[in-house]
Length: 388
Image (cartoon, rainbow, N blue to C red; front, side, top):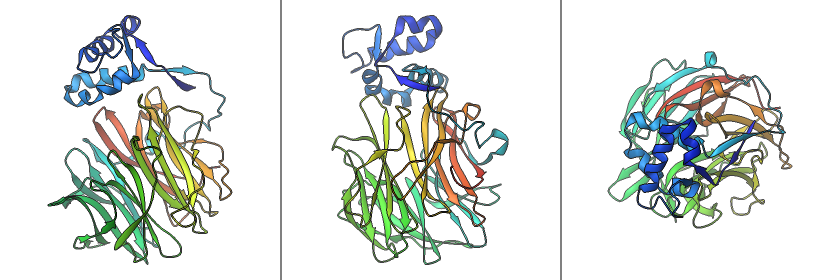
């Protein structure tokens, strides 16, 4: 099954099956800016999105009701897509790394010997947590950050983070060693507008480092480094329009060094389209194409190098329980392979499905699994090789 978005909800009809969600919809209609068409019995998607920040003012018992109201804007329809079932990841194959709050996976490093370390940032507290395989415990690092990302340069591993400073949010990096993290080093990104967040990095075979980051109300930018990631020069703006919503950007590369960039952009109804494009120089790009056209709401497209030198795209598609993770191949010629399902409804809603190649050819998948609206666990699972 797939989902078709609705422009609006008939609250009287919804009240027959979910009176609590209908009552909450009526409350949102009465909120400032909530009722735009003068019809209190019909909640439009743009009206719902206009008052979405109210979700953070709701007490915990009401948040599941808000989630059901959000899902009421989508109806199931028949799909011509054949999913590879059962999903590759089952609940029994998951290992929790961090539990509770708003943790999101940020960076995972793998040494040549196979040792693995992952860093996770918590959006509710700013905490940065480190966990080493087999991921039985996580310890807090002595700094706070809005987001973290990682890259390996010449065999050395670096953790990048966006941190509050006297001049606002700034990018810094620290060397990652078995003994811990090195001293923070400021990273200049010029000419990047103030307020960057969600940094993403990838190392290219020629020694350059690519950085993507998002600036609120301006969209995503790409910057390149020729000095091993000590500083970056902005080379491209990756947005679609100056009014992009829900923007993110993620990076990877083919074995031949071609840069792969995914971006996402939302519409006023909160539906997100994820796009992919490639570049040889970080300045000129191929036309963006959708990661998939089989779902109206596609988020969080991450890039993972395949063993054959092409890449796999790991991404989310909306389903009735929230979001499920999928992956598919992208060739250097620009062809997209068949979609392979990674998670199913039994796992509930997942976010940020990041894959990391291991020396034995398998892929470590790390993602956030939702417990309730603002409460997640970060979990991990092993995947056998690449997408079909």
